[in-house]
Image (cartoon, rainbow, N blue to C red):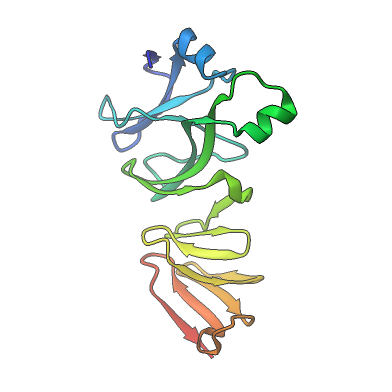
Length: 186
């Protein structure tokens, strides 16, 4: 994939930046790409990996500032025959976007399968993210619990886990935002 990197169009923070790129026309045509707002992650002036990303939705990543941020990660994919038959799309190639949580060094931590059709959300100033009502650790992807009631302080996230099938896990999860350690308050 030939691409052109545009320098100087993004803010550099802690050596990490998002740089807008332009995709080669033949690649765009081959994969039916109409979007033109892709970025690459650049660290200290070098492309970190050959992956296409976009800043999506109402997401405003603070690259190099926040410990974790989200981008849409694009990979080459193919529509299944069931979709191409219904839509009469002749070419089944496309770039599939999945939400990706990255750390402040640009390392991919979690890639959320697009089939979940739910928007992930990072709990501000923490190592915790949620998808729907499920809360997980970004570093381990361990699920804490599913909760409809959430409250937070500067240092902790509190989740009411009253509907767990495991009675030992029922109670209030008190989760440290800094390292993800937790205790269950009965």
